[in-house]
Amino acid sequence: GAVVSQHPSWVICKSGTSVKIECRSLDFQATTMFWYRQFPKQSLMLMATSNEGSKATYEQGVEKDKFLINHASLTLSTLTVTSAHPEDSSFYICSAKSWGGFYNEQFFGPGTRLTVL
Amino acid sequence: SQQGEEDPQALSIQEGENATMNCSYKTSINNLQWYRQNSGRGLVHLILIRSNEREKHSGRLRVTLDTSKKSSSLLITASRAADTASYFCATDHFGNEKLTFGTGTRLTIIP
Image 1 (tube, each protein chain N blue to C red):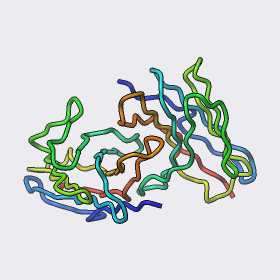
Image 2: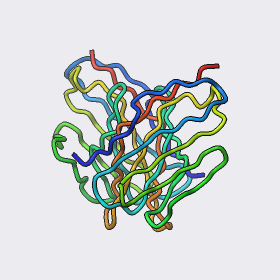
Image 3: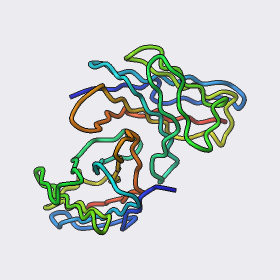
């Protein structure tokens, strides 16, 4: 099956610093990638949708200047949390979707746990 | 919010028993999928059911869909300790590739 990786798997940073999270599709080309955020014991909430070569589409309430998304190639999307604060501590999960297919199948990465001190 | 509701929020059963969890959603769907998430890990895709299907099986999993009631259920038969996880339903809608996740059910299998 299709494999999606995320790096790093966990990161601890000081308040005010920026953190970059990578999402890679390892064995397929991802025309669309999605970024989700999950707080403890809660469900996944979609943050943004990114298509290769174009600007990301953010969900209502998600600050695009704080969560910078770059989908520069068909196998890589990055999420940068700028000037991170403790309330940004969360589990960030990406998913990738290839072009075509019979249904809306998304392949999920293993997630990145961000802790902001 | 378009987020679906799942019930129960938490479920504890003895190993070997069957586990049933339910998902309700708000608007017409194209597909409904079920995912499993072990603590602190990513999502594992379990099964997809299309809006024109009523029931689907995969190993010990059985999924039903009732579009008139906007609800789905996931049945895990002969549960095992390894089934301990959170289970989420996710829906997508015609013309929209975004997935909307339900609130999730935390399943604990007691050995």
